[in-house]
Amino acid sequence: MERSLSFPLLIATLKNLSSQKIYQQVGTKLVLSQKKIKTILEICLLENSLTQIIALFNFSDRAKFKRKDINPQIVEGLLAMTVPDKPNSRLQKYYTTEKGKPLLC
Image (tube, rainbow, N blue to C red; front, top):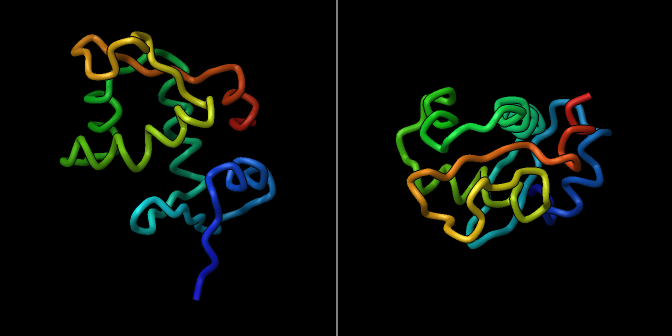
């Protein structure tokens, strides 16, 4: 049985992982891979809307993608919103923070 890791532990060990899958407990187990995290951070080096990010991953469930992949990175400070006071704004875009940029190396 796989051991669950909290998201802060995920960030602490991200640089030392190869292709391992990382688990986060949020109601149900969510799988975040190092590759997916890096891809999202790379996409967001330039500001992108959630729709643009989802299109690159070919996902159809916007709410699930945001909850599973975007929100944990916002909480950790790796991604930020252009309109933080209105998280559901139609003008909302996401960008990689200074804290997230070193993880791309």
